[in-house]
Amino acid sequence: MRKLLFFTSLVFLIACHKTREESKLPKPLQEVIAKTSCTCDPVLTKILLQDNIYYIMTWSGPTCYIPPVYYDENGDRINPPITLALYAPKVLETVWKCRP
Image 1 (cartoon, rainbow, N blue to C red):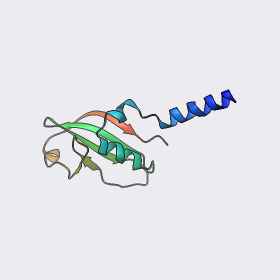
Image 2 (image 1 turned 30 degrees about the horizontal axis):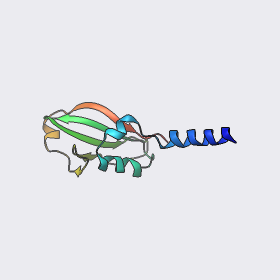
Image 3 (image 1 turned 180 degrees about the vertical axis):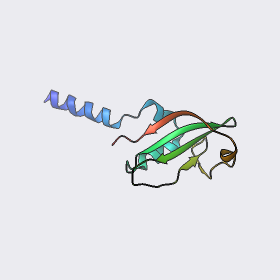
Image 4 (image 1 turned 30 degrees about the vertical axis):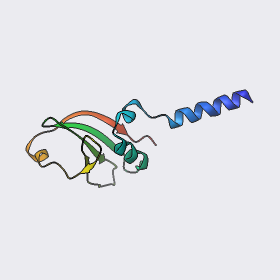
């Protein structure tokens, strides 16, 4: 019985554990990640554009076309920054990938 309780607790902890990167994200982005399904292989990337931090959610499934969604450094959804077309953004890191 103890082994079963230990195993159940361990599975629960692993299943509910956020990665370090996810826990560093702004609260609105954590909520977006929680609601995002793994259909079309979503990826959240952190970029630097003219000394401003932005996040971009993209999807890369073979039969999917979903336009990217942009977020500011606070996790609020925004329209694509106009400077995105003028300057090349620097990709800082992939902060989240869906793990089905």
